[in-house]
Each structure stands twice: as structure tokens, then as C-alpha cells.
Image (spheres, rainbow, N blue to C red):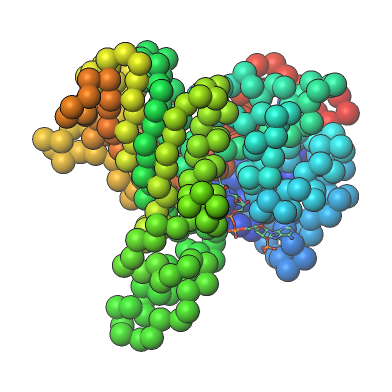
Length: 350
Ligand code: NAP
Ligand code: 12T
């Protein structure tokens, strides 16, 4: 078996997402040798893997010799610079950044929604050897919407997000901790660094940069990525993305308009049977999804499912998932799981 295992590189191994990827790779029996890569700053440092320290190497164009699968999570500019080299060296790249998501010849994949799209990356003539992992906020929303769309035909989404600080990386998590401490002890807070305003005890309706249309790039990612993953170019989507002082797991209030009537009971039934979804919807018991309950889990949790007060084909619900897990590392690793289960050989130079 060991010679059949895949050699895996994690670019961004010291980051919030990269560490989570390593944790998941420990659980997969297709994983053989693992290489941890980061910038020159972290070269020589260690990250935990399989109960031992894994030495981190500097990411260079030569890092991907004899690598079968390269998981990238080191930012868009790093992906643009190094992912094509990794693919050219024979590795299948699963990229977590936004660098390639909207490229026509790069599949954007959520296994519960469009699993068959991934194989296009492996086509000898057309594939670029790169699969893009969608934005965290988009992933958990489409996981919940896909089973409802299959039944009732989705035509419009209005979504507001309540996003955790870990989406902005490890140093953003430190900023929430240190600013919260200052705020409680009465010390002066340092100037915000990872956020445009102090994040402690706050809610900031601004994630990523503002665009000319007054939406943020994070909001427009939800528009374009949702259309691409669901294969619905005409789907109407409007998003408001808000950062809140939560460490892990994003929450979303979703309003979904359908072509046909869909009752809340039927939606609950469909979601309960859907892969990767857990319904937590018992208001009488104060049971609904919350970020603290979703931490370090792979599922997408849905609750507060209810019919619109006025419109018969509109539902509202609340969806929560760990952005570092299903929103990033889990989805990326599941893409590889699925290709292997479908019988694809992912060995470089095979
Ligand atoms: P993070 O905690 O700040 O970690 C960044 C990682 O990238 C670190 O390992 C860092 O290594 C590495 N890195 C930075 N510059 C580098 C360079 N020039 N060369 C090589 N490595 C470099 O950030 P994160 O939250 O893990 O996010 C990383 C990426 O994942 C971003 O692209 C982000 O957009 C994406 N992301 C995607 C999702 C999603 O929705 N799918 C969710 C969260 C994040 P050092 O230790 O050397 O600095
Ligand atoms: N700005 O993968 O700040 O496109 O929470 C993910 C998370 C971009 C992305 C964030 C971001 C992405 C964030």
C-alpha cells in the first residue's frame, strides 16, 4: 500500500488553513510523505504532523519534484506565482486562494454540489492541473442550498454573513485575543492591523476591499462563485459580509426564493438527508446552529428554517460551518478523496 500512497505538499503549512490541512491529512490513508512549505521567514521551523514535528521548507519553484498533490493556502499572489509550476511538475493542485476561482478552465468545486467538475483539471489537453477551492462563505451556503434547489428551483438569494476572524488568518485571531484583553483590562488598544476597525466587541460590515459598485470583494465572490458552482449563471445573489468577534466558524442568514413552493418541513427533510448537512432546528429546545458548536467539525449546520411571512416560495434559514474546516481544509481534502474514489490515478508521472 505505501508505494501507492500519494506524496502531498502543503503550501502555507504554518498558517491557519495549512495547519488544519495537516490535521486532516493525518486521517487519510491515501497520504504518504508530506512536505510542509512556507515563506523564508518560517523555513526551518516545525509544525505538528502525525505526532512529530514536521520541518517546514521554503516554498520555491523546485518544491514540487515528486509531489502528487499540492494543497495551496498561502495567499493569492503565492498561488499565482507557484501553483502553475506545481502543476507543470505533475502535481494536482487544489488552491484555496481566490487566484484562479473564476478562470473558465479551472473547476471550482464543492463535492456535495458539483463533484463531477473536478475531473476537468485532469484532462491531458484541456485541464490546467488546478482545482480551485471556493470562498469559505460560499461553500457553506451552497452546501445548504443545493438540495433545496434540486427540489424547488432556486432563483434568488439574499445573504448576510457573520464571519469569524480566523478567515483573515492566524494573526487576525491573535488580534481578537489581544484587543479583547486590552478592552477588558482598560488598557489602550493598539491600532487595528488585520481589520479596518477594532474587532473586539464590534461588528464590521467590511471584508476584503470595496469595489466600484459599493459591494466588497468578499460579497461579490459570493455572487460569482455561487453562480459558477451551482451552474446557474442567471441566479440573483446579493450579499452583505460582516466580521464579528468570533474565533472560528462563519454564520449566515440566508433568504432563498424558489420557482416552486417549498415548505419548511419539506426543506428540513431534504436537508436532513443531504450529505455534509446537519439540521439543528428545534426552537422549543433552544436548538439552532451556533459557531462555538461547529468548531473543528466538518459538517454544515442548518437551522431556523422558516417560511417567509408573505411570499409562498421563499424560505429563510441560518447556516453555520467552521471556515477553516469545510470552508477551507475539509473541502480541499474531500476533492482529492472524491477523485480517488472515482478511480482517478493522481500519481505524478503515472
Ligand atoms: P495565515 O494564517 O496568515 O497563513 C498564511 C500562510 O501562507 C503561512 O503559512 C505563511 O507562511 C504562508 N505564506 C505567506 N507568504 C508566503 C510566501 N511569500 N511564500 C510562501 N508562503 C507564504 O492565512 P490563512 O488563513 O491560513 O490563509 C491562507 C490562504 O488561504 C489565503 O489565500 C486565504 O485567502 C485562503 N483562505 C481560503 C479560505 C477559503 O475560503 N477557502 C478560507 C481561509 C483562507 P509564513 O509562516 O512563512 O509566513
Ligand atoms: N478576505 O478565500 O478575510 O477568498 O475572511 C477567505 C476569507 C478571503 C478567500 C476573510 C477573505 C477569503 C477571507
